[in-house]
Image 1 (cartoon, helix red, strand yellow):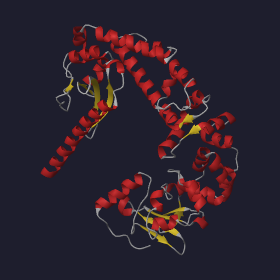
Image 2 (cartoon, helix red, strand yellow; image 1 turned 135 degrees about the horizontal axis):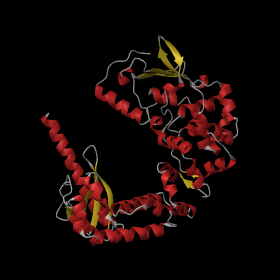
Image 3 (cartoon, helix red, strand yellow; image 1 turned 90 degrees about the vertical axis):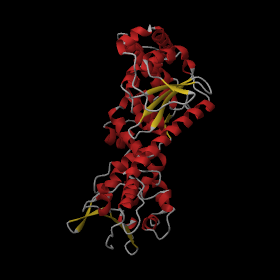
Image 4 (cartoon, one colour; image 1 turned 30 degrees about the vertical axis):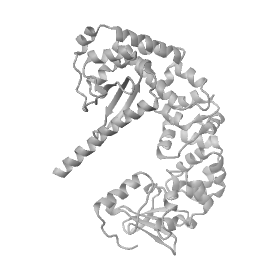
Length: 430
């Protein structure tokens, strides 16, 4: 392999960023394809700043082993490399590019099967190289096939691959989850639209620790992957009877955003209970039989908060709120006091008054918009100084029409452009 020459540091950072996105596009001289042996080598010592970052991928005929250069010799180390090698991005490279040349040595049917997997892709191809019959599992149950590939030992032999992929699907799931059954296999058959991104595999790992999520979704005829991933991040939602009832009767094509809105409503209700100092609010809301009942409690508590004498809230919290970091416009005005906040809630008939705590902690900011129609806007300031929209509500928590949302997004875009200009000016002064 030719000696690696130092490239500008910016380019090294760009390579590292693309690696972190699991699409490894590395140009010569950082990689080299050997046509005689059909092997691919990477020398990323300049990227990682470490002497160990020299890798070699053996050919398809040799089983696609991963080797790492150590102490002057090559040692097999499958854990050292888990990046995408078969993708649309790589297949569109020039034919003389090392990655494209190596890509083209992979049989077409194997490349087609492996392409969706953005993690453990090399393990997937190693399994297909050692045991072509594993393609049946890849076609019929790609998620279980993906799990099986992740279970391969660090240096799998052909026997290891055959033994693992010859097992029943329930046995593969048992090895991964610690339990396996035909009902769990059926549940995996109901999952729709996985992306096979690394975050999807993280969701599978989370499912190990939260089996109640699969249990509560098992009755559905189909489960959208986005819904599963959302619930895995919030297994506490199953404590609420209303959520369990909603999922029990949820239509197959219901968007996962429905559950996101449900979570937001529950969060608002519990915050109202805390502000109003309702004892055992959590236990009470958990027992409500339906989301309609939750919405009614939300409405009732919002009215109670908005009807509360403003002076009482000022005595508890003080009237001043942290000054919003960005000014408004001739039709968008920041809310800067508890008095204004409670008045907004009374006028708009929603629970914005319950956001006192988060406003006092400067975790969120509230604005009121008068044109094209009266709207309450919540924004969050990110660590980089930019602004992200939290919520945008009309009176009675109604969703704004497209024209209103366009005006809100235009305003946020103008704020973020100001942030960029300030950063550029500071950079130029340096």
